[in-house]
Image (tube, rainbow, N blue to C red; front, side, top):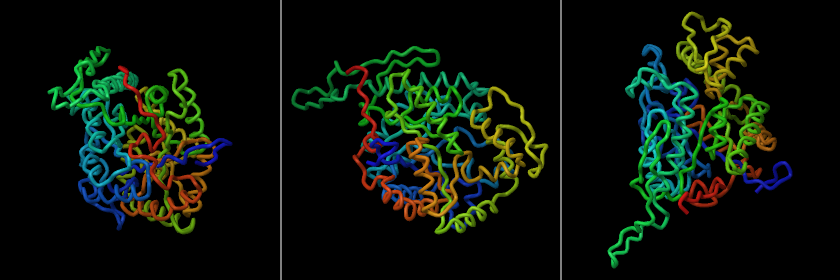
Amino acid sequence: MIIRNGSTQMPMTLGVFFNHTGHHIASWRHPDAQADAAVNINHYIQLAKLAEESTLDFCFFADASSVRDIPFTKLSRSAQYTAYFEPVTLLTAMSMVTSHIGLVATASTSYYEPYNVARLFGSLDHISGGRAGLNVVTGGEAAASKNFSRDEHYDHDERYLRAAEFVEILKGLWDSWDDDAFIRDKGAGLFFDPKKVHHLNHKGDFFSVRGPLNLPRPPQGYPVIFQAGFSNAGRELAAKTAEGVFTSGATLESQKDHYDDVKSRMKKYARSENEMKILPGLTPILGKTDREAQEKDEFMQSLIHPEVGKAFAEMILEASLKDYDVDEKLPVLELTPQVSGQSQAIRQRAYDHHWTIRDVYKAYAGSRGKLTMIGSYETVAARMEDWFNNKACDGFIFQPPYLPGGLQDIAENLMPILKHKGLAKKHYKGNSLRENLGLRRPMSRWS
C-alpha cells in the first residue's frame, strides 16, 4: 500500500496492450520487431511470460470484425489492420503457460450475440482459473456491417443502448447456475441440484435470450468487465457497467476531468468509486537518458510511410483527406453525429496547434490517440507518479511502441523503478484477476 492524497491506496493497476508488432504505426519496420507477430503463437507466449514475470496485472488484446476498409495499395504497407488471431482463442492458449496474469480481450456488442460472448469468456475464466476480462466495445468500424448481413452500421446512440442491454444479459447468463449447483454425487446419482439452475427469460429492445447458459458459473462470478468510450454515452455505460475503463487522455488536465466525471456518475448506479479502475493508454518511449529516448522516437517516426500516415490520420479523424497533401494544414472537417468523442478531441487539438496532416499522424503514430511519454526511465516513472498522485487515473495500460523490445524495456528498466517507489506491486495478491485488481466477486442475482 502507498499513500495517495493523504489516504492509503493500492499500487497502480498496470496492464499491457499487445498490438501484434507494437503500437507505433510503423512498428513492423523496426529492426527488432517480430514481423510475423500477428500469427506467431511463440511470440505471444514469450510476451505473456515476460509480462507475468514483471507482475503486470493483465494483458489485453483488441479485436475488429473486418479488414480495415481502405485501398489495399495503402493497407499493404501496414501490419496493423489485416490478418491476426481471434483473441479469445489466443488468450486460452496463453493461459496454459501463465498462472497469475489477467487475460482480457475485446468483443463487439454490435456483431456478437450475448449467448456466444457469455460462453466464450465464461469458458476462458474456467480454463484460466479465474483470470478472464471482457472489454465491451460497440464496434466502431463501419466496414464490419458488410460481414454481418447489414448494409449499414448501427448509429452511435443505438450501439450504446444495445451494449447496455448486452452486458445485463451476460451477467444474467453467468448467473444461470448457482455456485454450488453441481453436486456430482455418484452414490446418489445426482449430478446437479435442479433447484439451483435458472432460466433468464430475457426479452428486451434488442435481444431475446431464454438461457440457461450451458456452462457453470465462472470462477470470478463474472469475468472483469472493461469498457472504452470517450463520448457522453460511453461514459454513462462505463459508470453503469465497467470495472476497468481504458481512456485516451493526452494531458493530465483532460484525463483528470474524464476521471472525475466518470467516477461521479457511478453514484446514480449505487456503485462505489473503488469498483472501477480508470486506465489511460500509455506508450512509453524509454532510454537511459532523455536524449536517448528522444532519438528512439525520432527513429520510429522516420519509418512512417506517408501513405500509411495519411490513412492513419483519416482513421483517427474519421474523415476523408484524399484531396489534401500531408504537408497542408488540417482543414476544418465536417462534424457529424457519427464522429466519436475521441476523434472530436483529436481534431480540436490539431486546430488549436495549427497542425498539418503530417503533424497529426506523427503526434499519434506511437500511441493511437493515447498518451505518449518520452524520456529516461526515471523521467517517465516520475510523470506516471504525478498522474497517479493527482488522481487522474488508477494506473495505466502500457502500449509498447514495438514488440518484443518495447515490453522488454518496460519490464527490465521501468518496472523496477515503479516497484522501488511503491507504485507497482512486487507480488500478485491472489490467483484471480479480481483479487489482483482489488475488486469484489459479484454475488449471483439468485443468491
